[in-house]
Image (cartoon, rainbow, N blue to C red):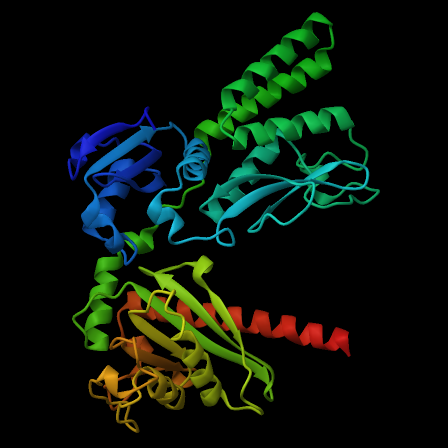
Length: 437
């Protein structure tokens, strides 16, 4: 990382307001590598609005490094290459191979390459590029690069043209195999950070075609060069996260509503999905500073409850969840349900809480096996009828529509996402069961 410029801790004015990659160093080790649309703003956020992850290392930061890339795609690729090479401590701590993203290049029986994104490197005779941290940005990058280098995403193409063929994003049912493989090699080279080499090779090809008076292929090479340069320079693949920028205000509302003074960053949402108790599942979705973090979603197949009993299923799911000490504990728990579901959650999270009115007192963790290692976590539940929000410590529910718009939107988003994730898993199990029968 010799090309990185270094500044002393918190000299933010020396950081550029351009896209690129930044790094945090302790006194004797590399702590973390990240990418950003605006390096200065992103680094400031680590210090001024730290997430629970930042709290693990931010006080250890001694120096900050940065490297301007000039484009978001180059920042994505450069970050991936650096993480792979240097294995920074706090990038590795949070993720294993299942949580990173890889671009896989495999081949069908005719040795025609096709491309897909995967979490795991468990396919034989497949090339992997990565790891990439952010799936959404990677998908956008591939979508843009497909304009310059059309590729297959499935093993077998139909005998007629598909929708992507008509959009010039697919090589079609009968491609020039040599040209297609060359395009795939160029795309892979871009993802490996070899943009300049690809551009040089394309310019050589264009010149050679022109000298041979093959003007059709010369024009194709020229169009690829122009398309690639435009894509890399102007493609926006990182989302400017407005939710996170406005999080301090939303967090303040949440603290007031939940009656707590402590920080709220990690919110976990739970829902149950089943048909008369069959193929029952529970979902756990995770929101960090108001934004869904799908890499941390978890699902539970209900094992001990027979028949339709949502409250008992909530208890099972939360009982199993709190045994996972390797998962960070939530700052707030949200349950899709009413007072019954709230009290079911409290029975696990706060086993010595007096229930019946949703009110509670602080528990002594040493008094309860279920509560061992579980801090005082605020809990709430949203009943579908009238959107009534039941909150631990409040006798009466609060109508969601009376709360600030930021809270209204956030609660509904968590509710909808936990429901979607649960029902998707339930349908998968139900389908598998039917196929088995």
